[in-house]
Length: 410
Image (cartoon, rainbow, N blue to C red; front, side, top):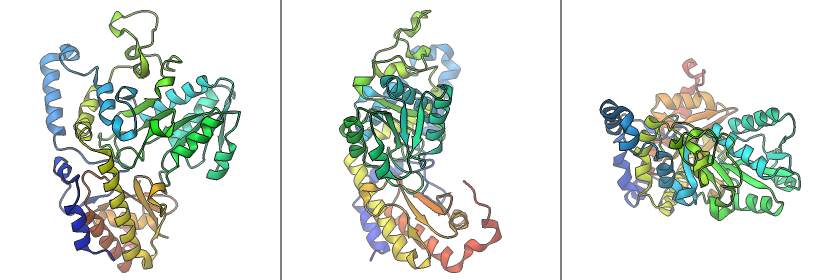
């Protein structure tokens, strides 16, 4: 049985404890379990922003040459490459997840021109599905987006007509994690490519793109990676694919010699050709506040901390709230779980709203899933204990029945 003392002992033994004080502390009494939506802010972000404003005032256009604005997409990518099992020069941070999905899905189709099927699941994240559907419509029906509900049936459906298996590594509702190694093995055996969205995985669980045999990947950086609301997304391409095709969006920053101002496009070497327009300088500087920390983080310690938080939280939810209608929706086996812990309750939406008033910030997804996203660099096991106790009180007192909690926010 877990108690508060045991949770505090876990925290005392935490090798990542040194990072906690480098993030801005929440308001007293508030516990943020929403790393799957927006991660914590590093303390030095305001100072970084102030320095950038001053550079803007003093240097204006000279900022492009006296600063690292143009290099930031590749520098940021290199900072987190070790977290996703990639080489530093194979990752960039640019644009947003949807744009990067469009770039890479269209690239995958050009790399397999004789194949016409994009294989996915209906539970894929909506933007992933929308990008595929929009691209198929744009191509005039030349491509079929085939969404298969059962995971075993999806694997069995990978065949000679499959151009790309297109999946989120982690289900955004239940936190179910695909076995990336097995999916990639099955796809490669059939001659198909794989494109992964690691938004609900990167910065929390073990992601090994190269080792798993993946081909392409994208992911947002404002969740577990703490890049700030709406921060640019990551994009990764296995090295063997990087030079085989022009990028779908052949932008100025992706030119081999951008200051030549040439009339004809010549793609930059490797991953850099996937850059499009001017870097988002302000956003990039805020992202750097977190990514400078990520360079110092050992992946094995990150994964171990996240596993410990997850198993502690699941055990506490069952121990304290299992008799009050709470059922864990995430896989029992941690190796099948993603970044967040999900649980169901018959009145999950109002319960989530009551939790917000009680200082526990999670999120709700229909029909009845409450999600707690676990940020390993700043979250304590003690936080998990307190959250479970507050949830228990809400359920015992039926606070969630208050009319003000019946309108559920995102």
